Figure 1: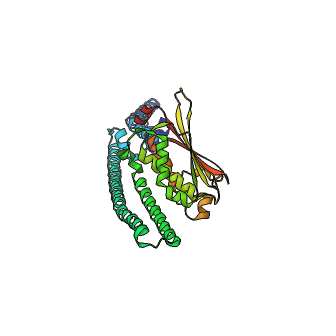
Figure 2: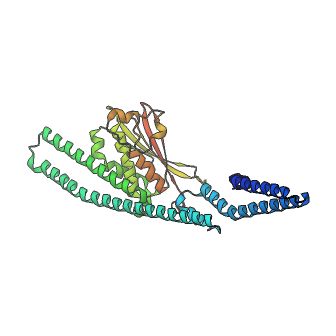
Figure 3: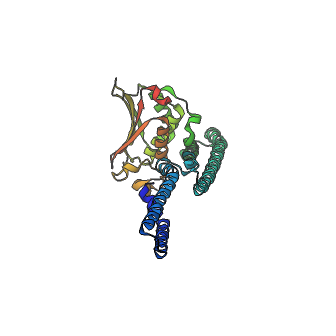
Length: 352
């Protein structure tokens, strides 16, 4: 706090003090005191009054400046008490005690909120694992029905196939809930290794083969003979989200999704391997494109199909951010949607 602001706040006490000095001068004059005595009395009062204001400002200045700096620099008000020292005047001590109690209460609330979040995340993970058991059993039952209990008619096989796809869809949504719950603490289940890019893409395609076939969408792999530093399970989930997104907005005839790799800036500090995933679906409008990675954003396409949740691409961007993978999106309305992943070839980047 500047001295000007402090003096402005002290105008009322200064006004009262000034009135007292003037009243003293009047009394001395009426009493017949010499003018020199009156001048000396006023001068002494003025000196001690100014000295008192300066001393009071000096006492408060350190504490107030610490508060100003904390207000400008701190991200959380709960840490203010850690940034200031207890002042030596009574009013400041009371303010410091209030800050200490408010900070403690805020920290306690944050700790309790984190505990509840961790408990809820653990419950979701446990629920996902339990929910997968009956789904796995249902898949086995369907496989047995294919072989033993059906007459082999095209209609029966089609119904079984449709039911299998719906079960697979439910399983994907359950997996999505699991990865969403873990996205805050990806490091707990994250193992960086060198992986074949082709093997990762192939694994994601195989995991979604039933839906790709049903949508008559052809996967195409181009120039994927690279090795990248990543986590196999998390990247296959990310690629699966893009595949499902492409299936959702696929065209009726000639639908395809292309996976292509490239090595860029070879030999430079920015050297990276880029994986591009491009479909030829309906694409995204220029107005919607900057927001495709936002949580809950579905855009014009989502309002048309009524099936979008706005979670898939959000998870893609969030998990990539956690893993140090740069991700960008591009699109031309009516021509397709493209997502590009950039993997640094410097493995030390992933351990910083």
